[in-house]
Image (tube, rainbow, N blue to C red; front, side, top):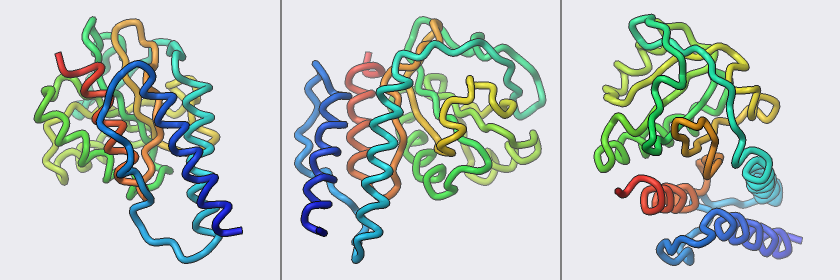
Length: 205
């Protein structure tokens, strides 16, 4: 049973990455693996469920066009979300106060590193359900130069609300979500590969 789950896990992971890569040519994916040791079938099943949810989300939400909504910056200024976007591709990371805190921290670390290559103006973090004070503390504690905005609960068309998961996508002024992705903290190389792909395909130029 354990071996069968490992095989299924590997097939799902390879398929998910392949569907996202499409015509681009990223580095070989042979280094993708579960990065934390797992000693039980329950752990394998949990990872399998995460990969399944991630794949379903990619199918469901890639290409989704969001309605405009209002965001607040850390100075409590309100602006339309659309005003933050232009013809260039931006990385959008949305999380809520109910999401996995470790998943959020890991992704913010990756985005901070990515901002050093593409510029801080190409990355937008959206914090759902937090107060301005909480968001300001979040930015100051991590010494972030990336723009972080608070948004009302459900502002992003309730995408991934039921699943209670943070997500990343690529977006420009058309507000269409491309390369929709759910970071998985247990699979560092899997998420790193996603970041490599979006950099090469959407952010390099």
